[in-house]
Image (cartoon, rainbow, N blue to C red; front, side, top):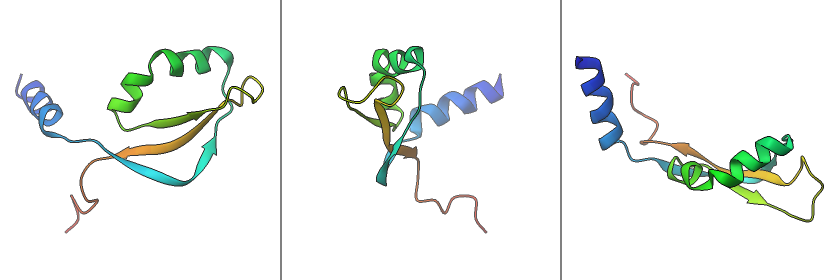
Length: 79
């Protein structure tokens, strides 16, 4: 029960930031994976992921990752 409380508190207090990639990272995805990203774009955005979609590219190559999540300054846990 204590661990659940700690996890819920962590989720409430953690702010997810985006780290932009220097260049988009092309992804090779199955059609169902592409569909999953499209259908859940809001969830990905809320969690710090950003994608670029290019409808002119062939299937499996339409998405590129442009940002990934991070929380904090990166110095947490260092001593």
